[in-house]
Image 1: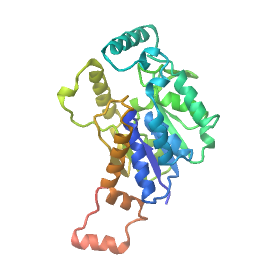
Image 2: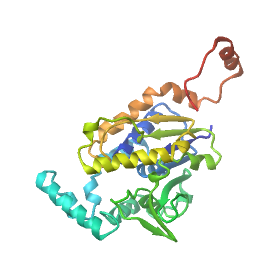
Image 3: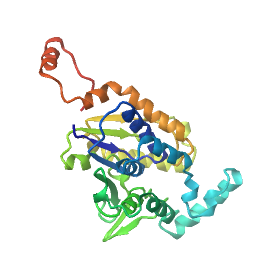
Length: 298
């Protein structure tokens, strides 16, 4: 059975994708024939497409420190009140003087360390990720060229990492317009698409809006959700992992990976049906006679 795996963006919450993959591996399901992702989903998807299993991704996630990949030393200070003031001042200066808080050069260097000169078209499992072109206001699907460069583009969170110029385009995070790129899988002829969504727009407690950044993030999430609802609906089955963890809360590795695995376990019956080769004629007849209905799998 040929199927596609699609992983949404969501910052640190994207670590839950590792848990979903971990559960799929534990159950012995076949590997996907195509992987697509946006932002953090692109990074996890690229690792998976390159042959990393869940255990290897989990080990890497535990060793990852977000501050190590930010150029401004203020973002590597200990987390206490004074350092937060310094960080806020550094962030404001960076925003006023340039296109983002960070150039993204350290992140790009890390991607090149992990994947070398690998080109997307040469990856063991076909892969694609999305970006948003600020010039045209359109989604761009990155499915060829250097993998490291594509990942740097796809995770360019607006305001945090500087946009990337490519030809006549100015590219930022793919999650802005196409956060769960099921359309990339559909365009390649895949009818069976399993999506992992870590950025559902759920109701939240108003008290969680503690600062201006939280408000901005919520506004962005609401706008992007409306923009790609029709794309999300292309998935045959969506495993949703919801958590209130901050976008850059990479310290919650075990909790987020565990969340993803539990979400997959709760969707076990639907996942089993997803990987079935189709409902038999006898089951279809019995369903008509006795009103049996499958769980919701689009």
